[in-house]
Image (cartoon, rainbow, N blue to C red; front, side, top):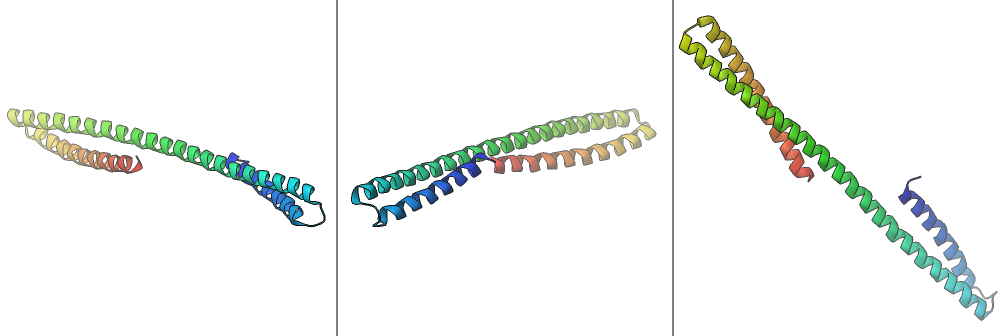
Length: 144
């Protein structure tokens, strides 16, 4: 059983016992001194249950923060990965464009056509990588 669930169950049982003791303290079957003692125990258990509720709240908040940190770290990792991919795609496009210029200088028709096809392919890959990078950047910024 998870810690918050355990604390919640313990709190329920303590509240049940506290209510039973409070009922005993308000009954007239006990003398005044015994009712005061039982009432004191009931009040102490009620405070103890409130303390367990506060502990549960802190534990849940810590778990939520830990989960958020993990999500943010994963989003950052994805963003960095896509950023690297986009950089590589941009470099590839730059290289292929340079090869196209070289082929145009040499005036070799087959090389020019092949280079144009490669430029179109790498331009498309660069656009996709840039789009993916911007999407993961937005997810990272929203997740932070």
